[in-house]
Image (cartoon, rainbow, N blue to C red):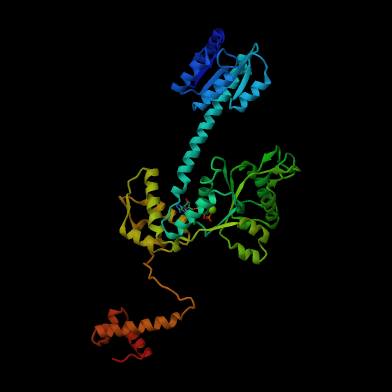
Length: 455
Ligand SMILES: Nc1ncnc2c1ncn2[C@@H]1O[C@H](COP(=O)(O)OP(=O)(O)OP(=O)(O)O)[C@@H](O)[C@H]1O
Ligand SMILES: [Mg+2]
């Protein structure tokens, strides 16, 4: 689509000149001799750019800029001046003008570049807003699914901590959703419009991780051909997610501690202290207190990062969430792959609910995806679930008293009761009783003797 530009200038010859020139450049151009008319136009036409003279009869270009902004105009604004007037120019930039151009002899060439730059900048800005909105749709709390009491409590916590700037430690087994929780915190926080930067601390060697996080200055090591910003700087005003923080080396732990304490970083090979305003969320599936006890993780760093600990329970401890998540993944796959597999078969649901999900939500997500791809009917059947899931037997609910109990004694008493019951049902005919319990007569006799059962 062609960009729409409005020219505002009280001099007819300038308007004509610009109009002809910009049309030739391929833009859709209108013009107006004064600011009042321009204001009206900006209300009705969806303009991408206004180019306005500063000195005009009733209303200056600066006033026009202020008023269109008040009116809600969010396109670009370029000012033209007849004289070099630094004061006014600075004022204009402060008020959100993209640039100003002095009407010198060859200003048309300069204008061409500035207009192209302004429009590109606007395009990127819009694209960015769009992407952020999409990102939010995908990762907002709306996408963090869970109806179990434990998850509901976690959601409440997320809401509370999002508003603060405190450092957060997210713990939980692999695949429980630590990264998703970190994103949800970011998106619910006042920092949502700045970056969420995720770093997997376990994926880099120590030196690489250092230059990733803190950047480097030109010439600090072979291959450092230019200065490079580190991720802490990229995440400025936003959030940095330090995943697998338990994997960091002792030297790295010291450096992280310093950032947490002083909120400044130093690029590799640099001397300058660069302040950073970053919210830190760390995550681990390791047992940090145990690592502290064994001297593998710095205690002072542990206390710094665990200001607010958030623990995500494993999926097997919030079984209510299993069918909910399974259906969520199913409907997401339907919309992304354009298929019509509307439900899980009863058998599939039974298996899914019975399984222990050691790989947590990620394992469930993968299992559903795999079955979805292989499914040819309109119902997701159990036969395409991974073998481990499909073979899972419904669980018998059990409880263990706090002070423990003897499983062997319990099993024996249970066995004895079943033997007696079977005998009662078969009127003392031992062959029949053995059959009822799907045992051989021999082993039935064996247990009768063992438990001293008399007929
Ligand atoms: N509550 C949830 N609702 C919806 N999707 C979830 C939920 N929890 C996890 N997921 C999904 O499960 C997958 C694993 O989540 P995530 O990567 O956040 O886990 P993790 O704890 O960081 O795992 P790891 O320790 O292996 O890095 C992701 O695809 C994520 O979208
Ligand atoms: Mg993760």
